[in-house]
Amino acid sequence: VDTVTAKLEILARAQAAGVPVISCMGTGNKIDPCGFRVADISKTSGCALARIMRKECAKRGIKGVKVVYSEELPLEPIETGETEPQREGSSRRSTPGSTPFVPGVAGLIMAGEVIKELSQG
Image (cartoon, rainbow, N blue to C red; front, top):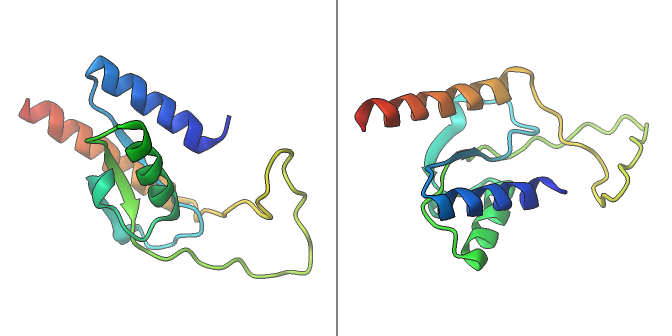
């Protein structure tokens, strides 16, 4: 199961059960931890994964999903002349790299949003 399909299944089940959800969009090939934003999926821009999720959520009637995303344009990987083996079942040529701290920052932002929601409600 690919990432988008798995996320959509979780979001649909959570919405049906009335459970609030926050989801993280793409952090691959990004280096600016200050570029993250929190918004409804319908208000995102600049993130390829968020664009796909936004379209798929609209198709499935999934609304009101809070996400952490980055408007930073992803860096282009440097060509080294070596080819990375293609993953089975994937059309992607290479896996997006992550600067070690960027996904962690996104996770901390999500945790902060959860704490804010819990403390307000």
